[in-house]
Length: 171
Image 1 (cartoon, rainbow, N blue to C red):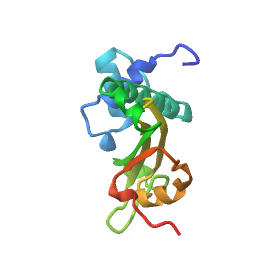
Image 2 (cartoon, helix red, strand yellow; image 1 turned 180 degrees about the vertical axis):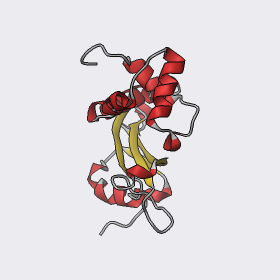
Image 3 (cartoon, rainbow, N blue to C red; image 1 turned 60 degrees about the vertical axis):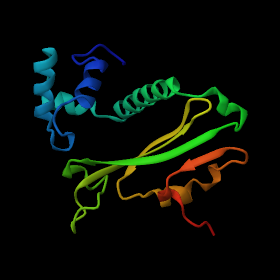
Image 4 (cartoon, helix red, strand yellow; image 1 turned 135 degrees about the vertical axis):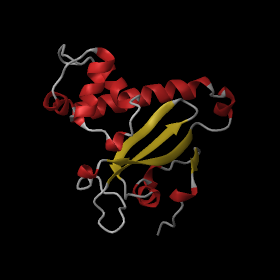
């Protein structure tokens, strides 16, 4: 947070993550109404729109990474260190975005390919409890493409766990 504003970072985060509405269909007026109803914050949709910036993306990624790391650390078995220096688990998930993001984050769409979709690629080291990568890409970027582009990150001695979507021959 650079300066004190109307919407504290915690309220911004809660509004985006714990909103009861389907986020792909949620509008700025919906979010401003939620901020007003939940926290008594009266903000214009233009002012809220300005909060969706590269800094906000970094903020959301850092919070998500921290929360997931803490959750996974609770269940970590220290015996893993005896077998492997790192156990790298890599997977992805996709989620829909409003159609207006279809140009930047293309989805599969029926034939128009205009609906928005984002793919979240992530890799976690089970031994250290550290996130190795967390990337947001276009929804049409599949796991096999990611596998080809990150083959140099496979390291000797480490255990790499990926779902079958990442299995592809490398020539």
